[in-house]
Amino acid sequence: MEGNKVKKGLLKPKKDRRDFSRHKKFGSPALPALPTEGLKRPRPSLIRNQGSTNLCTGYTATGMGAVKYGRQFSPDWFCMQENKAQGGVWGGSSLRTQAKIYTGKGLLPLELAQMTWQKDGEFNSVNPLNWDQGLEEKAKPFKARSFFTADGPYDTFDNIRVALFTNDKDGEGASVGIDWHFEWNGAKDGVLFLPKDIFSTGHNIRIYDWTLIDGVPYLVFENYEDSTWGDKGIGYIPREVANLCIYTSEGPYVYTDNDPKDVKKELWGILEHLKTLLISISDWISKGAPKVEPVAIDEVLPPPAPPVTKPKPTPLTDFCEAIKTHEGWYVGSRSERNHSPGNLKYTAYTVSLGAINADNDGYAMFPSYEIGWNALKQLVIDASENKLKLCKNCTVASFIKGYAPPSENLTDKYIQRVCSISGLSRDTLLADIVKAENTTNT
Picture 1 (tube, rainbow, N blue to C red):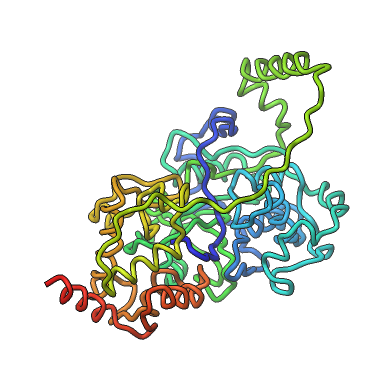
Picture 2: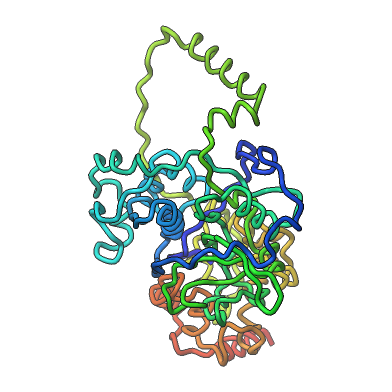
């Protein structure tokens, strides 16, 4: 769900074919060459906590740097650079932006950081205007050189193991995007399991090893929920979860000391020469052309989404309309594009409600507004009948806490706004809302 969200912070763009292929450059050994019990790498010396911020990409990058350089770096400064690169509207970052900052700007030593989210708040700590831009010189010595997609001839689980074994000489690990399910926040001993719920968000983790648990191989990762989560801050991913939930549209990425110019020449070949030629032709055509100053365009609010036939007012439709409004229904919004007023995730459950596909971020797409609207209503009805794990004997407040958990969202504000729009009390039982709906329609 979107709304006023405070996510773990990973955005998921489309696949970019310009990413360097690890397999194409280095090849892949046969799986028997990999140590069965992993690389025996040490646990992180410091388990850090990103709290309820969107700074996961900063924590992963600086976590990798801590291993490579043996010192701590500022996740706030790193995310500030990502924010600047993405245009200054902070809501998290993508793995590709992370890679571009790590290879282009580097890492700022923690002792030089002017801001932290704990002291100054997240949105202040990632605001470029609050930082001395001269600090960029201090970060340059800690840049990575090249990043490669951890691809190969095997499944996602084994392709990551191969990348760690063949290319991760410093023990930094791989930067990995994962569809993080909220039920994993209570994963016993940090062992992830096949998700049962429909609620998840993009998260960035550092996978740095694999190990055996009761004879079964698991990828080992650092999670940034401090030492109270999982196995003292460490988690474990079995094969079936890795293959289902790890993003491959971008990443996973491993970093090497290869010169990117040499890699481009080798992997891109004639395409790189064609690009250089086109740039030269463009420069030749534009030579002597008059400069055109950019014209400022006033920022305007997005227009409302096309009108839809409003259902007959009932407590249930009022409640769903309030969720739809809070999630953001306007022209060009995810809700409008996906015909999904509730911004539901694409899962087996939402498929049963009529979802036909997932967008690039894993949100459900419905064939029409009516089907998406009915899916949201049915979710509320199922929750009222205790068919979902969101809550038991759900009230408006407890439902929204499960629908948009406080660890990921500004849940109290969500509840206040939905109650204000719908006229319902936070303590109203969903069962009473649905009962009123049935009474109205009889």
